[in-house]
Length: 208
Image: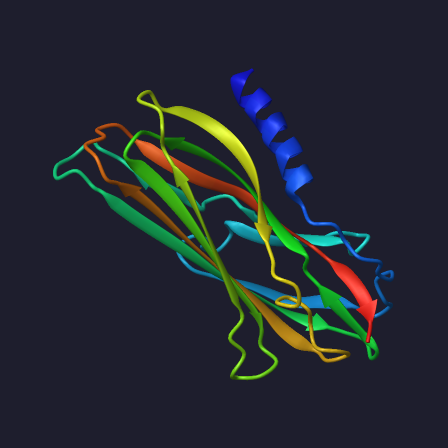
């Protein structure tokens, strides 16, 4: 019951925090994603998938084994663990159109304690030119309870205007790198974990 209540409250908060969208157009005929690829210890073969919504309004990255785990059943006590997933996908964009990702949203659960924290870092860009720098966002979750508990969270990842708007009418490759870290700064002697279920990206389209 507690997990369900926290989940619903967090969903409501996320919805309030989401930025407003400007007027856009329907997804153009011929827009498509091609050859989605996952590389990394957070998305080994068979543990991650790409799902493009039928109405072309979003895509999801679904993970079944992107768990950060700090077990404490042997000495010395482990204090740090990291995992990563590098996602890339081709994008076919019809002439006269572009698309934007206004925000990302990811859902995960965590078992953290006081003096522990988890960090998720996001890096994304369009590989339209070799010099493309892309954008980066980092989010930190701190354990605050003496007694650990498992909670489910949905978080909105803000995206600065224009940072994920595709080139006009140009086929590109889009990349999203997810890096995750789990730290124990204290003397926690029980298992800690932070697990991603899925990451979603909203899509909007415009003429250009």
